[in-house]
Length: 329
Image (tube, rainbow, N blue to C red; front, side, top):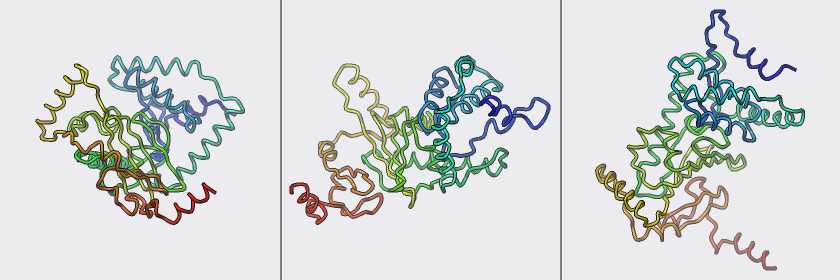
C-alpha cells in the first residue's frame, strides 16, 4: 500500500505540466464533515490546525489536511511573516510524520466509514467534486453567507436570553458550523436518534471566528461567556441561548464595564441589568425528548418544547408519577 505522501501527490498532481497549482488544493468538497478553524494565517493557527486534526473522528485525514494547509501557504502570492511561521510549523510536523500502525489503520477506517455516512446525508447535498463548476462554488459561498446572516439574526436581540425558533436551512447550517467535532469556534455535537444538533460557541472569540471581526463589533455583545445553539435537523429550526459572564467588582473590571457601557450607549443597544434576571435563569425546564433547556420566566409555563414540539412532562404527569412510584418501590 502506498504511503500518505504518495497518495497525496497522486491526488493533487496538476493536470497541466506547467507547474499550475491543482484546483483541488483549495476545495472543501464535503461541508457536512468539515472541521472549522484550520488555516495557515500564523504560527498559532498552524498549531491549532494540528490540534484540531488530532481529535478522534478526523485523524484519518490529518495528513491530508495539514499538507493542504502547508501547500496553500507555500503558494500564497503575498506571504506574511505569520504565514512563513506557519509553514515552519507544518514542515516540522510533516518531517516527523510516521505512517499509522495496523491497529491505528483499523480505527481510522471506522472514522472514514462515519465520514462516508455523513457524506450521504441531506446535510451534504451541496457537496461537489474535485473540479467544481462556478455554479457549485457560488452556491457554497451563498450557503456560508446565509449561515452567517442567520446567526447574526439569532444573536441580534440582546434583551432576550433565548431567541425564538428561526428557520435555518440545513445546508447553510453545516456550511457555517461544519461537521461534528471540536472546532476553532467551539464544538458541534449531533444526536442522530433525536435529529438534533447542539453547537457551543466559545464566547466572543468563537462568534468572531464565525462571523468576522467587523460583524462581531456591530453585534455589540458584551461579556458573553458562551452561546448554545440547538438545531432541529428535520424541520430546520434553530434557537440560540446567550450566557453572560458574572464579573467581579475589581477596579479593572469596573473600568472595562464602564467602557463597554459607553460603547453600547452610542449604538443605543445598552445591556440593562434587570432585577429579575437572576430569577429568569432559575425559571427553566428541559425537554425530556431533545433535552433543550427553556430559559426565562416567559417560558416556564410552556406545555410543549419550543424546539421539537414534544409534550412537556410535569410533576403531575402520569409518566412522572409512575417513574417516581417505581423508584420508591
